[in-house]
Image 1: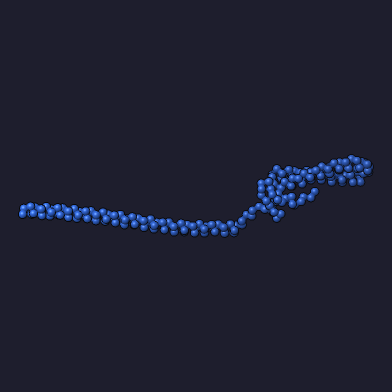
Image 2 (image 1 turned 180 degrees about the vertical axis):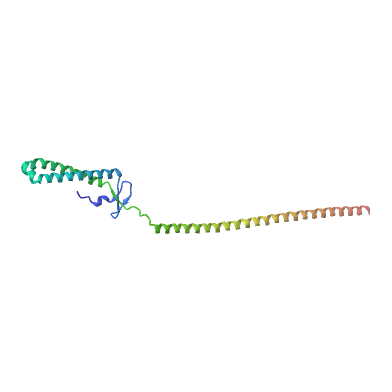
Length: 191
């Protein structure tokens, strides 16, 4: 029985697709076990067929049993055994059609894996350096904000103290004006 390789190409039951160049054949383990058992059964039947043919063509067998025995007994056994073998081979063919071709992913070799690991380490190192740079920038910004807040608070204290002084000066000026005004009124009243 001829198995066409095109039967092992195309979409699998799980939706994966493989090309004609796939290097592996994938199938269900039960199908594989059944195929293996069918092949073992076929091997046993082939041995039986060989033994039947050898015994029926053996000259002493022909001399003892005559040609009619070979024609009826052995040939009917041989025919029955070949029919069974044909069915086994057909079953093998249908089991093989349950498998599909697939290209499994290549495992990276040690050198390629080391190269990829080094590339990842380099990328991590660069990201850490960027993170440190950003942290430094953020810390400088926080320091500037603190400094600006201190300057703002200092300016607020200065303005408040200046307003208090101005208030005190104005209060004294008012009290002096009132005092001077009272003296001036008294002077006018006495004259």
